[in-house]
Every structure is written in C-alpha cells, then in structure tokens.
Length: 228
Image 1 (cartoon, rainbow, N blue to C red):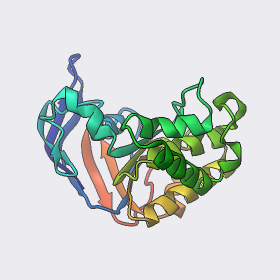
Image 2 (image 1 turned 30 degrees about the vertical axis):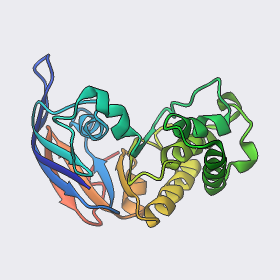
Image 3 (image 1 turned 120 degrees about the horizontal axis):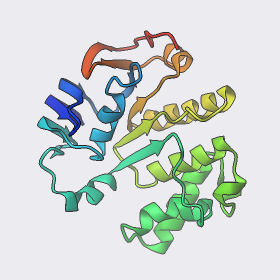
C-alpha cells in the first residue's frame, strides 16, 4: 500500500527533514508515527498525500509514484485517500451533511448515491441527527467526527491522520480512537501521527519512531517510547 525507498527531503533553507527513509506499510495495517518535535513526522505524513514531495528517492502509495506524480494529478490521488487534521478543516458555510457530501460532489457522484453514502457515514460516526448543524454549533469531538466521516465517505484504502486527538479532551480522544479502530477493522489502512502516549501504549499497533529524519524504531505492537 505504502512504500518509501531511500527517501530524502531537504528544504530550501538547508534543513534535512527526512534522511534516507525506507519503509513499507501493508494494506489494512494501523500504524502510529511518533517522535519528538522537529523529528520529521509532519514531513513524513505530508509526503503521503503529496503536500510535500521527496528531494530524492521513490515513494509509492497504492502503486502511484508520488515523487514523479504531476501536480495536475494530485487532486485525483487525494480523492483516493482520506486525510484527518488536528484542526478539522471543515468548511464553515456548509452544514455537517454538506461538508461530508462535498467530497462526493467533486467526483460527480449521483445525488442519490451521495445521500445514501453521507447518511451511512454520519450514522457510523454517531452524528446523523446533527446533519443540518453548522461547524460553529459543534463541539470539538463532533467536528472531528465530521472530519472523519468526510475522510471515509469515498471508501478510501488509506486514512492519514495528523494529530487527530491533539485538540480534544481525553474522554473525547478515546471516542475518536474507537472510531478509528472501527474503520481499520473494515480493512482500511490507518497511518496516524500522534503525541498521545497513553493512546499508543493502550491501543497497541505498529509504531514507527522518527528522529532526526531517520526511522529509529519500527515495532509491531510497540509502545510510545518517549516522555510526554
């Protein structure tokens, strides 16, 4: 599903964010990406949805080489994956239903299919009853659930989550993690950057630790491994 071969990323200011990464992530895996601030986690995650591109090396997501992918084809790539952000990135002028439906409208799905799929995923995240509410009327946890619903409405093979519980209280964070577990159980690959030590140590999955732009630890069922 995801493969990096000797991937380097050097920014114009001379900072080397990734320093020769080699990694493979199979379909259906749940992977935490951990490490101290400035270690290269964000660059690693952004590579996955082509927000950043490698300076050198090869990177494949579902057989597509992101290093050579033309910019005009990036939107098509992103339609095949789900991305969940710490700050939700909901469209404020659209209600819950419309925020989720938007992901299907851009690929010109039929209205009947959009309605069916949007109601299904809102039901899955427990927000079907709030379909007509706007982002400003939601709690942080509810907004993140909408973000997750939007990320999976296209039935992507992979969901990339960048600190998805970072702005949430502990109880809500556990609710969100249970939702990710449910999504992963359907066969969707989950790749999650996180600083939440308790979650990583409790809900055990593969842990990739990045320091200084290098993978220093890659353990199935590993622990967080850092003070938080």
